[in-house]
Image (cartoon, rainbow, N blue to C red; front, side, top):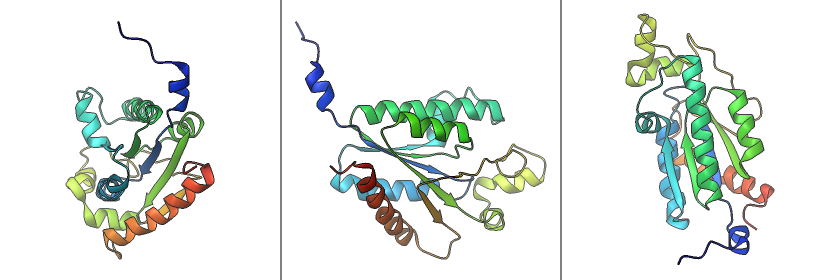
Length: 191
């Protein structure tokens, strides 16, 4: 017979950190998030990376790209991050996450949460035109956050990372790590 886990063991399990990377499509969330994952994983093997596009596929692509469906997905991503964090995993989640409500939920319900806003000028996003998202929008195809769908820009992110393309990814990740370490000290995560 398997004995249930004792309350003492449950209480000794330290929550992991959630690094919530948000920004518009093409801002570099996935690229920066993956690089951050590889760096953190060297020291913390309990680190995982979640990407909004991959999560959408895992959830069966049952949601569209309108505001209501995007909100449902963002809420599901937040709950998944909380679950994984509560089991001791450090989670890097790269998602547009365009809703104040979701980010506020994260702050209230995820013990160790760092919100990272990857900010890029709109003209740079149009130049990058990753996945032809912005050119399709100009042709009336698709629903693009920040263009024809509202983007609730983060009001109080812990970290704002400017990614206008003038610095290499490694420099951006180094800056991000510097700020993340500060946030971890301030929240008591490193204790």
